[in-house]
Image 1 (cartoon, helix red, strand yellow):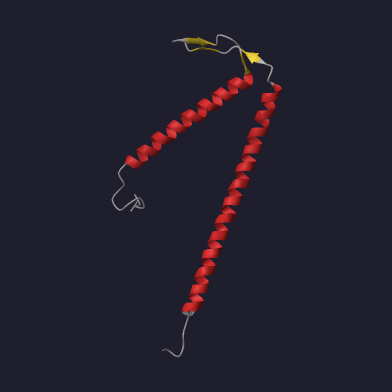
Image 2: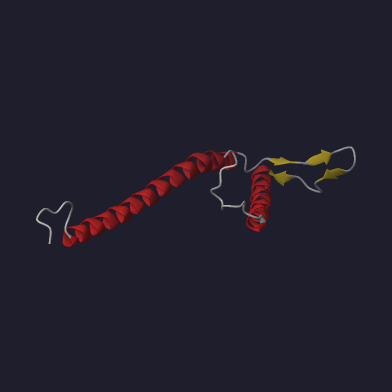
Length: 123
């Protein structure tokens, strides 16, 4: 057994490791809380004006038409503006979800470069 020991003993190292794990768990909880707060603020800033606009324009209706020169489209009956907003929002979510799935599948199917994903193309 050496007379001079540099560094912590095995018991001290176990205590340090346990404290490190506790601090990592506490950091993860703080990160989750921050993400929830940011999401709530974004929803509030985006949702509140949208809700107010929908309430303000609930009684207004519009006849939607689209003429591209190749084909023309017109609604049979006028629709309320908040209903059109909801439909366009839902279509946007659907298209975005489909594009995300397609791109995710393409990325998974793409071959990795030699050396793995961390290879640097400039070296």
